[in-house]
Image 1 (tube, rainbow, N blue to C red):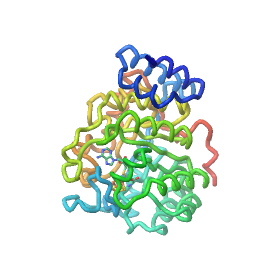
Image 2 (spheres, protein in one colour):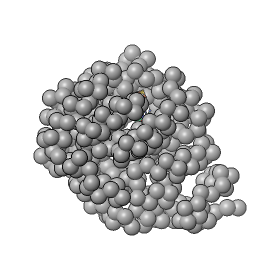
Image 3 (cartoon, rainbow, N blue to C red):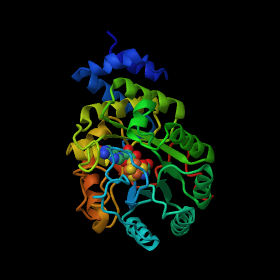
Amino acid sequence: MIRINEIIYNLSKNQLPSECNFVEAVNNISAEEKSLLFSTARNVCATSYDNRVFMRGLIEFSSYCKQNCKYCGLRASNNNAQRYRLSEEEILDVCESGHEIGFNTFVLQGGEDPYFDDEKIVSIVEKIKNKYPECAVTLSIGEKSRESYQKYFDAGADRYLLRHETASKKLYSELHPGMDFDNRVRCLWDLKEIGFQVGAGFMVGLPGQSASELYQDLSFLKELQPHMVGIGPFIPHKDTPLANENAGTLEMTLIMIAFVRLILPQALMPATTALGTIDPQGRESGVLAGANVVMPNLSPSNVREKYSLYDNKICVNDAAEKCRYCIERKINLVGYEIDMSRGDHSSRGRVNVCR
Ligand code: SAH
Ligand code: SF4
């Protein structure tokens, strides 16, 4: 029987195991193997980033979305969703208070909201970059044309997060009515070619996903070589077609974080809020399995609850400052230091500062 240490050895030589070996090893992983996998992932991460965990400020600026992803509480068909938009001024205010408490990366995330056309996004990005030229701006606003991405980049946006969600074409089409996996992939390659630091990623525990589908995620990431990878458990939302499905497990999510760390040693990988939602120690465990980013929420408290991707999301009632220090304490307790710098991918340095 193929064992995890053989897979770790192969990955250290930049070789993926065969799908069959991966599936067998993951489905039969022992407690000792898991701890070997996680400690190897931690060591690989430390080679590039020591014991630093980067902190980014997340600004959830619109809960409107035209898409209908079956897992997501913001899907257009969810009539119970509470919709809101932050104004440009409100977004800039959030950046100002975030900057005062040390943030140097702002992640602007939202549903695919046609109200925020290219002109509005460009204006927001330009204003943030003019005011804080040393800070990084990350966008996470879904699928756009290459021309739109180019405009955001020219306005000064540094990074773009667009999870591929699942690399199984079949599962992708079941979960995303009206969307097309090939277009998602096109977006990711366009973003890379334009010069963004690009984040892909996937959910673990999606209904219909087994170790074979997760193998496809690894293989997709190996090919794309993104700078960032967001991996979190699927968590059901009560007003979606997947309301009665089981959530992904902490264990499988950690295993996938560790494998991705071995495949992409320099990647910036968040210990996600979703991980902290399924387990009170989820984010710390994520760091101990090879993650090296945390993204506390900076959004104003009156909108936080409305950005409801999944049920029981943590920290919806906490002020930004409280979240920032709470997560720092948690990370310190497991032996890591918070780094408030821009935290670029180690292949990049600070080259994007003065574009
Ligand atoms: N609209 C943008 C960004 C907002 S959604 C986009 O889709 O790219 C951000 C991420 O939330 C998605 O990529 C998805 O992976 C995650 N997400 C949505 N619903 C979720 C759920 N029910 N459980 C866990 N993660 C979820
Ligand atoms: Fe919209 Fe993103 Fe939710 Fe899909 S995952 S419905 S694109 S907010």
